[in-house]
Image 1 (tube, rainbow, N blue to C red):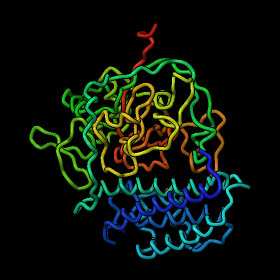
Image 2: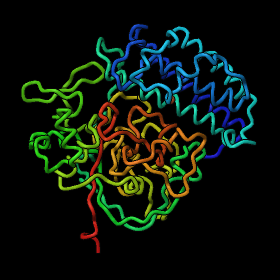
Image 3: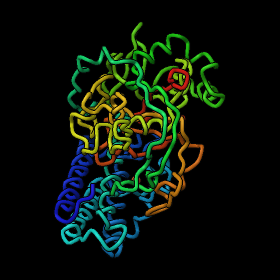
Image 4: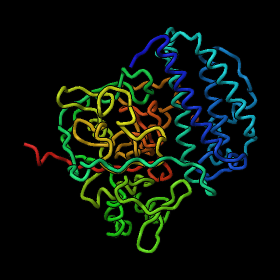
Length: 440
Ligand SMILES: [Fe+2]
């Protein structure tokens, strides 16, 4: 929602502070040796994230918006994500933890000075505080990435959080699927001030009616797929998926193991029994797709997901979020790393969409069947490397955010993308089926 002047300034300051508090917690909860270590070739050392966050903030706010000269030109390329793939980053002459923190602190001090006198107009970067919003979102996205690194790391557990409450009483009586009516709806946005280029512009999409799972697929349901031999039956897998399943030896979600007859899993260093009513996490797109076929269903397309999440048949309008236009509150969705796990399936009735689906926002990212591509009328902004260079069939779209995503980076229009083999991300899925035969 468009805000101007002091209200916007205050909001930006609050969001910047919130993001930094999370960054400080994620990087302050481990020792320096742990910050420098690479816990997986898929992830940067945490100390890289720390200085990279500062480097992007300096680049976009101090240099592009503020017109300042580079503070430390000699380190610029070290923290350019396009110069060095994650696997190479530990070998770079990175700033040690104390210096990385000092750099972040120095940049932030100057950014707050800039914010004090900023006018949110005049250039596209300044309009609605977009550049500040982009940098806030960048930092919280790295907070999510760093939380993934925490899940991968071994050693003494360092993160703790309260568990989400049990599912509401009505969860047992929920229908397994909901009907999303056919017809046109408006997808994407031209109005959301901090939406990124790939979410734009708003455009009409006409869909056939379909049924969608009311909640994400649970660990209990997924365990049935495993027990039924789902991983050993090529009928359920695409050719690429089957080849990957064979080569990678997939047999259960990442972090799952056996303890006698029961499934156990590691959660931030603590081993516990798998909870059957929790949405399944850490499955790749190929596994999600195979499960759906085994269940006689399919993954929803990205457009179907968004229509289920945003379309209100009573008004014909597209909402910002499933529950309406208000920014996310604690009762709506499991976001922002308040909890370090998804809530039980059927939770968050206050966040339900008009179609009745729950937990579309928060809890687990949801794989869709769609490749990542531009909307009609797309134009790259403010740089091609934000989205455009990733468009193509090699990436699948994920929607809805997870418990690890900050509300500021989780809109009904927000699009995430990753390779179909990726499992370390906080991703699950729900399934769909056509409804044409059932509707008059
Ligand atoms: Fe980044």
